[in-house]
Image (cartoon, rainbow, N blue to C red; front, side, top):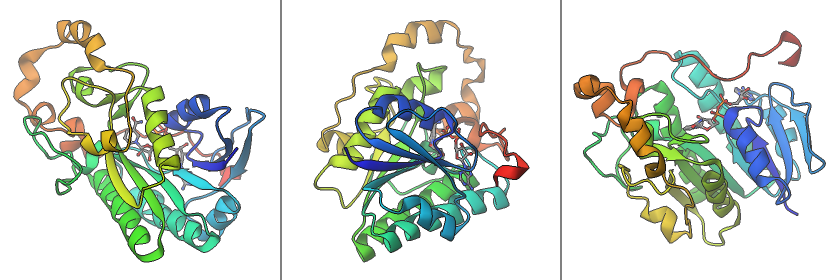
Length: 273
Ligand SMILES: NC(=O)c1ccc[n+]([C@@H]2O[C@H](COP(=O)([O-])OP(=O)(O)OC[C@H]3O[C@@H](n4cnc5c(N)ncnc54)[C@H](O)[C@@H]3O)[C@@H](O)[C@H]2O)c1
């Protein structure tokens, strides 16, 4: 079994992926908060993305990296700068220095959030970030392109919509991705023989999508779930009064107007940083 590093493993998406990838890879879990329920095929390393030295130790000896770690919502500039700009640079630089070639990067729909929901965009559309957070994801995608072009790394950036057991509202009928579909895309990123630097959208087979995900389909993605199964229930509970507001007409939703959003990441105890 390949050994794969999963950064941000203590977070919501990391927890889904650990479950989905169990038995397929030996996973080195890393986060700045502790994980104490490792499976037999998992090991844990406490590490901080803001330290290149810490990340060099963390990536040593793995075959590939799934980079989920960072600040996962809109926040103040320093939080985004440390976790997502400096953090992503440290991760890519550590991989280059330690000879790890393959990286799957968790980008976000918020790299493209200022597109209108009436538009259908593909992986070639110019970025239109909706937030400092979205901007940091554009940086991460470009970092992947630079490290592929200049140093020969192989990078799949997945512009994740929303990972969850089910879509929760009208917006997420367009962008939802089930944990098993997300794991399938991640596995393509880890295994596909022909990846240099690619961008795909992280969504299930959603009828109401705003994205043309032909690049993912070209790489062999065959989503098993579809948001339409939940549409009748979600639309019945939907209040159309708000439909003319920017968060309801633009792809990024509330991120297009918000200056900060509560961070879902677990708090860090003093003795763990
Ligand atoms: N949840 C989604 O549906 C979704 C949608 C789009 C993009 N994404 C991206 O996917 C990734 C995972 O999302 P999530 O929802 O699990 O986020 P999360 O906030 O639950 O988890 C992020 C993890 O990163 C860790 N982290 C933060 N700063 C760190 C640092 N300096 N050093 C080491 N670890 C650090 C946190 O402790 C946390 O466990 C993120 O990069 C996020 O931007 C997620």
